[in-house]
Amino acid sequence: MVYLRRLSVEQRLRHGLASDTLYMMYQPQVDETQKTVGLEALVRWQDEELGIVSPAEFVEVAEKSGLMVPLGRFVVETSMHEYSILREAAGRSLDLAINISVIQFRQPKFVESVLEALKVHNISPRELVLEITESLFMDDFEPVLTTIERLRGHGVRISMDDFGTGYSSLSLLRKLPLDELKIDKSFVDNILEDERAANMIRSIVAIAKSYNMELVAEGVEEEAQAQALTRMGCRRFQGYYFSRPKRLDKLKADLALEIGV
Image (cartoon, rainbow, N blue to C red; front, side):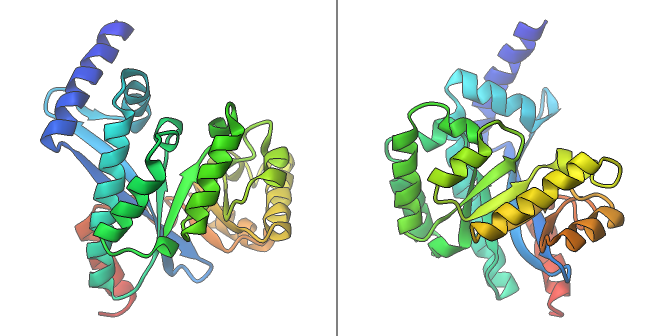
């Protein structure tokens, strides 16, 4: 049954990529005043046969079936296109964060494809944040480092997603030119009840400050969590307490209200 499900998802995903049944949503990132300062682009899929398929499921299938490159291309191109529309409507720039898979990042022309998309959609590299995970560095560290340095040389920022959940985070930080750390939701979930989780967050805050990095706490779902994170020194947040992911039109309307248009 698992094999048949995976095969079905793969077949429908191929169809979806060719027929535009995938779409993007955006979860706002806010500062301590709850002003929207950034967006994380999140791909979603509702298939006419399978219904709503979770990103965790179809991204895994894409990675194992050779579909990650076209899926990643769709995410980058669509996110930038829609962000350019949103920025014009809002009358101000935000940070656009896009998750990049290991397979995408290792493509020979990845840097060129990102720069070309920025040019096509008239987006400054400084508005783009590419989110990567530690798994990217498991093999062939030097080529990955070279790619990061090239991107940052053009002004694109690099964020380490799910920071603190792997084994090599601290050693990596000594070698990697990163701009941002994201505190994983698993720590935020337990910040109020588990002192070890709270201490881990305090450590990550200190690390970010010592390396002069931005810091984003994700998965914030309660006011008490937000208050605790603020006391620890976090100044940027993402999670259901502040906003669920939204489609472009809803986001445009909400940003207009935020700035009083």
